[in-house]
Image (cartoon, rainbow, N blue to C red; front, side):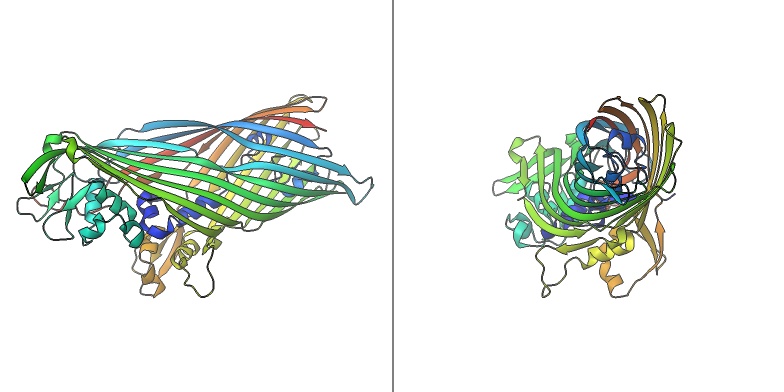
Length: 572
């Protein structure tokens, strides 16, 4: 299986000065659903398209709001526990070291809802109408990862210096360049934070983690650097759902949702480099009074990105009960119209053995807003109840991510569409995602039930073979977009990465003879492993001036997410 790779995330996010992020990975992040629901629906793998009757089912199939012949109020507090094992390699995708595991625990509210059931008094036709309002969590961004190792061949600070090649120093040194030029903010922040400087001719730079050769023709990392990469993500996506559902002759249930999703996404990436032996990292500064030598001790780079997301969609659903035991369900959700408001900021600092030369810089806060159209999704379900003893349910959900489209909030027909490249990337490199859900419930007594569930979700991300026989991913296509747009190159054969996210859930429920009920669930979700590069590959040299055949570091992340939920509810 080909492993999905996400390289140099922070650099990709910061590269376009006036546009924040707006890449395919962000579109997928905001569009994906990983359903939570009530403890009952969670413990059954959310295989509830054909079941209904539970407030956790309404977000998946609006018709589920009409199945119960009573009103309900339920609240579901929970815990989200993210565990990420990170392994570091200083030499690209090989020789990974021991994994460092980081755990982050946060409180959550997977579901909160109220339904009101009104009986019409008719023996046939529309026998009852149900109105429901609920908040249902559809994604969790809880994530924290740390990786570290020693590197004596490449450096993030040196990569900044390499990336600044041919840029005039006066532009790098001018703080107004953040808003008056197209220069990447990470380079401006790194230069103004003292991470690299010029030597020789204008436009040639070396990092403070490097030594310049005696002949001035190359520069290299002279010793070991203790490198640490830290990434944290916080936030969640929650849908406020307004539901209207109808019970038709106790055989057909129809429903409509108006969904108002909101997401709060907080991303922070930090990279630290410290000299194992500062004596190997001398830095010479020249001024009118002479030449002074200090020694590099450590450097810190941080990138923060925040997104506030709001949207609206509609969803239709139906459940048919042809026999007393069999239920068939289906639902269709329109694409969601999102508005996304972003902010981002960069920070860099350098520390030397002589504090006089210490430096730091913080960029302005970047701001941008844009629109995103997310995929449509369709769900189909089949459930069978064994009298009052138990039931089994199976769901299949399909979403087409190739229809994701960015647009400018304020664009009119006379302006150029700045999202042409990103939207073509979405169309070609995001495809179909499939979701299989299976759940079961067994009544131990009329009051107590045991439940279990399983979920399998595939990734929509694709890669291609192009006309030159090369393997092309979304980043490579986007960076070379006009070669494809002008038909110099063409995409030939698409392939899916085959990444799978799997969940296993268990739970139990108690239903009193009166109105009170209680459910508990625990779910373990295993995400596909991914690799991450904290900086780009660049041409690096050894002490003798030989070009090193080595990549920038790679970090292998393996994430597990545990969710615990408890539902307290009352029927009326």
